[in-house]
Amino acid sequence: MTALTGLTAGGGCAAKYSAARLEELLKGFVPVEAENLLVGLSPADDAAVYKLDEERALVFTVDFFPPLVDDPATFGRIAATNALNDVFAMGGTPLLALSIAAFPEELPTELLGAIFAAADEQVRAAGALLAGGHTIRDAEPKYGLAVVGTVHPDGVWRKSTARPGDALFLTKPLGTGLVLAGHGRELVSDEAFAAAVSWMTTLNGAAAAALRPFSPHAVTDVTGFGLLGHAHEMAERSGVRIRIDALPALDGAIEVARAGVRTGGDPRNREFAPVDAPGVPEELLAIGYDAQTAGGFLISLSADQALSLQSEFRARDLFLERVGTVEAGEGVAVS
Image 1 (cartoon, rainbow, N blue to C red):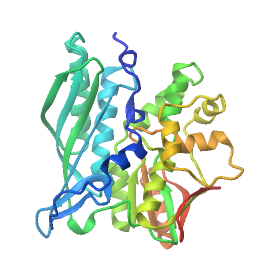
Image 2 (cartoon, one colour):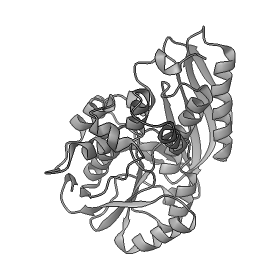
Image 3 (cartoon, rainbow, N blue to C red):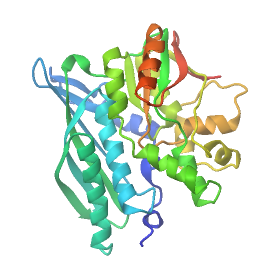
Image 4 (cartoon, rainbow, N blue to C red):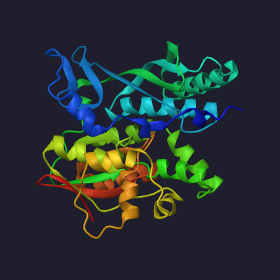
């Protein structure tokens, strides 16, 4: 079988463009004013949202990247999950998806078919339809989706509306990049690798359904900028200070970090999101800066709802960990 990762310089969400450079690139670039553009680039979020009428708005996103695993079906499923989760992160429900694909022409047709078929299965599992797409020739393979979903205009979740006094929760453990890198260096067991893949192919739809009745103040999904990068975005755009006091990690991730392994996204994320972290061990900061692929939600909601939210997630057998608080001020602190 062709080793997909051998054809790439960096895979998954670690292949994202530097957040700092992207911020500079888009500075001052704002779409033409439109009354019905509820979420665009001012400020940017996990997806764009356009209001159709008083009951419906469209959520639109696009996400694709090079392979981070060698198995084609697993790659297709992870890439689809990562794109679909952007719609869930806005409080929406996926409706329709289109493939975005770039592959070397010499790759076997059956390999590409496995990628497309697995993506189609995941799109259907999210309640949507894969209805076509666009494929070009490229030396480095890439796959992902453009996804359209729907949301009530009053039910849009933004990352820019966290409030002082809120509790912060995370719906998936961290360390996918470290575990995958460690597995390639034989520092991580096959079981830990399989667990990381399982999380990366877990749609955030069930977590969104559990969260929706609580009307959270702010939500974002944790992907290529790492937990600390996405916390930085939430803090800066909400005008608050975020304090992280827990960094739940996948099995094997801490050990890989202690061995000195870092993924390509780590230095870019540190440059983008400096934090106050006196005395925090370096391996824990590495977990916080590790680029995640198809990660969970970072949720900010009123602290008086925390116990009820935990009870609801427990009743649905869903992962949820309280990871910090929102305070008055600015920046991100880790303690």
